[in-house]
Amino acid sequence: MNSPYQALPTPLVPPEKPVISGGEFQPGSVALVGAGPGAADLLTLRALQRLQQADVVLYDHLLDSSILALAPATAERLCVGKRASRHTLPQADINQLLVSLARQGRRVVRLKGGDPLLFGRGGEEMEALAAAGIPCEVVPGISAALGAAASAGLPLTHRDYAQGCSLVTGHRRQGQQTLDWPRHCTPEQTIVVYMGLGEAASIASQLLAHGRAADTPVAVVENACSARQRCLCGSLQNLAALIEQEGISAPALLVIGQIVTLHQKLQAAMAGQHAAASS
Image (cartoon, rainbow, N blue to C red; front, side):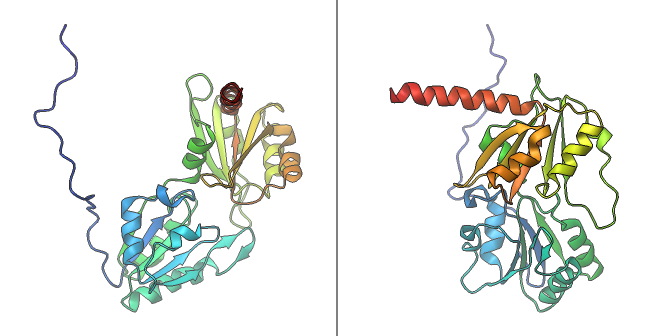
């Protein structure tokens, strides 16, 4: 019987060193770099390269110090991040600072948790840099939702549990209307909420009011992809109480949907295997 797979014409020979094709990091330009979900070894090769070439790094709150340590000792480090309602710098000031530093002829890295273009305000910074004529590169990172899914055993889609996934933010622009919750209320859909701890009670109330069942499984993943990671499970009706009772703090994601049932099954199976191995 003939194999459906074709042999490669020549063996693949790995290069002597990793090949990074991102080009040069020019003085007077800005790189918006995704730091991933937290662990330094989840950075991309290009993110590492840009950090090692940086003259100045503007970074968010909650970034692991081991990631910042990858920048040269001579690089200036400026914390400009936001945490809940406490802003080190307003976004407009961050935009202007990026422009000012680049105009000094420096290689500027704007280091963000997760991915710069997913709830990271990278789009606003790109607009400001383009308007000022500053060259800008975006280096994607592993988003927190994907990192949490992998490290906590929470596949965001699964043929038996969820046919779709919505990524939403619990923190919206002041004065902006609430999310269009009816679009996210089908039982076959997983919802991942970024920055939703402070709004957990309201989020649960909105989902319940628009048809989600009270016993819909919910997981809260705190400090994903780190040694401090916790994944706590409950139901939609007790989500706010779970967060308060367990003292959960940022960074944390809310994962809502039947896929959490699979996480609980996998955790129970793994606990049984560990118990059998120790007996």
